[in-house]
Length: 480
Image (cartoon, rainbow, N blue to C red; front, side, top):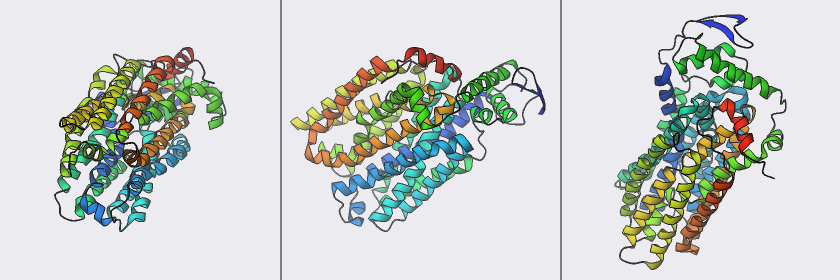
């Protein structure tokens, strides 16, 4: 690769030939997308591993038969750490890059997982969970940004959906590993499932050294030739190809226009893009209030309410996880064709119906109840997996402009973890206090989310990130 200080246009460097990268074009794009999905695999795995081990006899005995409140805090305290770093990681991503944020998040998560694996008591487990949460917060903030910035507009929905499938595959892996480990007659029945997450975190950490940086970050940092080279690699074309230079110029022009803003603080974000911030935050809020973690974290407890006992409850959770994985494949084919809004609307309806039916079957407690509840859980998870699972992770980085993307996504991600914590810590108590009424309560939130999407959410299908600012501005009235 050669370069000079001359420019072939207003802001395009003169470069010729091809880069030395072995992997280019769609092979590179899909490889990086699958690699990034490991980041969401990690917190999907965490959801499943905790749901699988908290009902185990050796786990309960080791922690002296923990109360519902202690179980809730042990499960949900990770979200406190995730909430903190999902906000603090935005300056790290803006100033040092997406790769550094990904790398440090993976390392911190791995250390936290090791502490959980070798814990010798309740409070050490809490420390390990919080530390893992710090890593999760960074990963859950930066992975959607990274993915959106390397994805072409026509495939952005597909690649974002692949990322979410990685999350649910992690959940399924943890459930089945937990089920297999439940046959061990000692503390390894819960320590082994906890240790597996360290392998994923270490792999993500090491892989981050060879993945390319986001071209939009590089260009924003005036590392123009590097940015152009990454664009060429992802397109699989020579550096001086018209398409490569056109994409570079579109990004560079957007960067220069954004720099005219000057102030990139959270305050400036709120003043200029209040409506978008509230839409992004609400998408993640309802992803939690719509009830997913009642099922993901506490599926064995839900099945126990429906009279599945002991290991059978974990087995039912395992079958449910396979259906959940299958459901996440649907948006691969629909999200870039049907769009974001129709998927969210239909998902909200299906989830509301299945949650209401779940509560009703538990209330009447008939011979059919165990089978009916399994069916309702599978339908609910399938509806979530193809709608409110992937779209709230895809949506915020799409509607946020480059200079505020990290901060805007950090706010939406922090909202996710805040409500994730609330649902996680309250569910064991609410299952005791209001029993079957818990599920219609979350069905109500599904109905509210339907109304919100119908009246406020813009469609972003097929719109390039550099064109998104004008598109969203023309389609969203500011929310006061």
